[in-house]
Length: 366
Ligand SMILES: Cc1cc2nc3c(=O)[nH]c(=O)nc-3n(C[C@H](O)[C@H](O)[C@H](O)COP(=O)(O)OP(=O)(O)OC[C@H]3O[C@@H](n4cnc5c(N)ncnc54)[C@H](O)[C@@H]3O)c2cc1C
Image 1 (cartoon, rainbow, N blue to C red):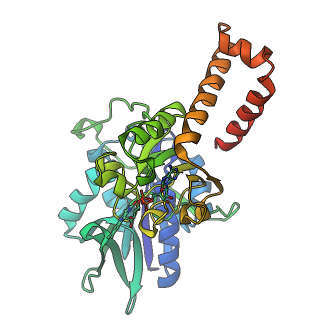
Image 2 (cartoon, rainbow, N blue to C red):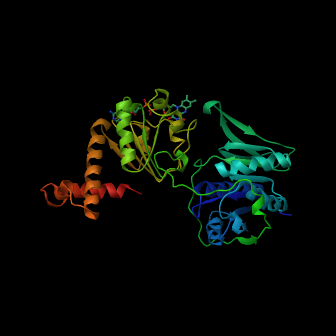
Image 3 (cartoon, rainbow, N blue to C red):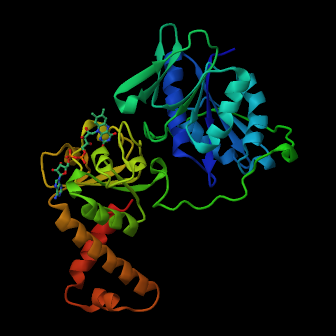
């Protein structure tokens, strides 16, 4: 039997999660070094259209585990459906996103089969004769833990979402697709998902956020951070920041970003008064577009940024907020009742300036 790395993937609202695609790509790299195949498993119903994406990100074989009872997540259902498929696959490494649903069933399987299981992993290496080496940060990021099990036949690792980002897909890449229709007894599921609530961008876990607005020590205190938060609310983004800001109590501890905090991969990352220390930058490597405002033109954050603005955030943020408010009011008026702001937007002499700002702002929005 071919050596294989199994990647268990997930979908949300019909789409594969970014964390799943990161796992497929990590699995691909590990498999190439081991001379192994990548088998990707996806559970659900009506999931066949997602196979092409899995192939494009590196799958050699795709197993679609299809059943109507798997339309919504159930830890019992996933265990019943996946255990036989995993037994048959006989992998040397099982990779999955470190997500709530995976944490609900994979540890139970690991205990049942007496397998090593590691969460919060950042990378998988290979040592010696081809043992997977699981790497993660410990002691608040001061140390790296490298774990191997030379006597284990299978190691399970849950990868921290956002750690590596998703690469460019190779469209047209071919993979072998197998559809498995398990016999399931949904009445025996002790847990089931009743409904999935849409995520609130202000409270969404940072690693899932599509837009993040961050504040650092340069915000100068709770007042400056409140402006950053206001901008986040205005553009439907999650609030983040640096460890220094969190240490000072200007930001909730679970909201600081970096090697010892949250690893994020948003489409848009905006940083205000953040110097761009290595520990912070290593948490945003997967970000698509980075915009930074800093009054020191030599700040590393500006070098990392796609759009850097050298200036005082206390001057720039209030102007940006005012412009966005005017834009929102104008847009509301366009779709509904006319307001003073919309009159100004359409009729006042300074309307062209506002319009051009609106256009630039929209360009910055992913
Ligand atoms: C083991 C270890 C782990 C760490 N892990 C993390 C981590 O996970 N995440 C993390 O963030 N940090 C981490 N740190 C801390 C990290 O080294 C930096 O100290 C921290 O990221 C700096 O935060 P900062 O950018 O907010 O502050 P500073 O470095 O003080 O930068 C403030 C910036 O704001 C700019 N500024 C000041 N006033 C203004 C203004 N009015 N307008 C515009 N710009 C202004 C300044 O020019 C400066 O660039 C760690 C440190 C250690 C030792």
